[in-house]
Length: 188
Image (spheres, rainbow, N blue to C red):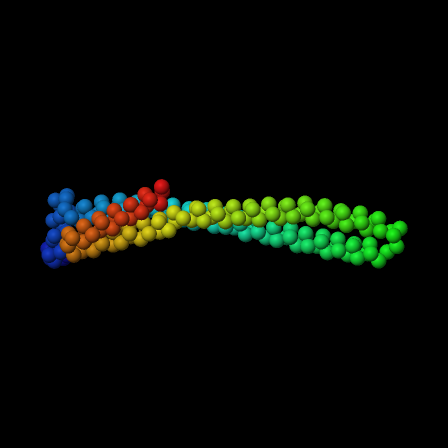
């Protein structure tokens, strides 16, 4: 453009200006198409992140419960060791003092039963949290594939505007349909 009101532009600029003035054309369709895909892509991306976060929370819960179960099993082992020491002591002391040690042995056996039950319950909770993590993560793969196809569709649509090759727009529509289809199957 010149300072004197006279300007020269290339054929591409002229075509773009002419198309903008007419109000319709390939560029406008591609713009609407990519805006819709970008909106859908934002929703798919959010859902993918949300499923990943939820799966990670379940996985963290599984690790926590497994650690707590391990602590209980260590406590169980400590009680078991103390019980064995009481058995040894009972064998070494005179019969008059064995009652105390036998009472301690019985106490440790009761303690072990409670600890074992708690450890097994924590292991079951860990297994359930692990299963929940896997269940929640399952749609994430479809959502990631969906997002990939949507991004490919947006890229192809952008190239369509630059090259004016309408067959690229058709290919973009196919990629978009595949992305939306995968998104729907992830929701089901």
